[in-house]
Length: 165
Image (tube, rainbow, N blue to C red; front, side, top):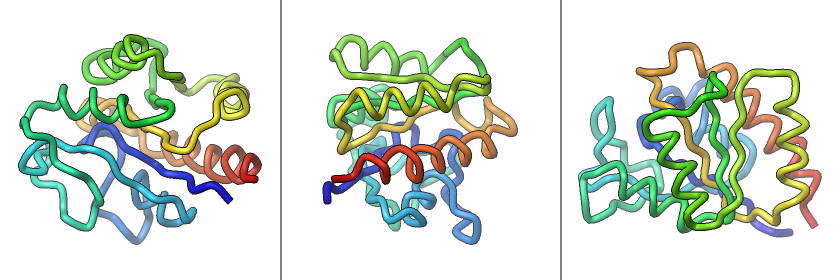
């Protein structure tokens, strides 16, 4: 059975790291028996402080978020960007641009009627062993947590588990 890995892009983004009673993002990967990893800025820098060591992230040499973003796209088979809007900005837009420059498959989902179908088509079309999950910072995307939970549940339960050999 192939290993599925969840690689997060934005270490301070829409995904809460601290509440292990109700796992989200990296914590949700644990719930679905999915490995996590990826890059974070030097010093484990994040918008809300220092990223705890329990998260298996490697530090880039630079403290810049841009390097972390580029390296996570580079080291993944595909990128999933989760947001609340059809328009991307900031680090989410940079993630999309890096995926395009590196010719890596990428999908941007946001709340609409079609996002589940897009996700299923994406996972059926691309052989994904390492998925880079990205999106806006929580400070810039209030109330995104429920949608993130839905998307990650969908990909882990309905897409990845269905596609395992």
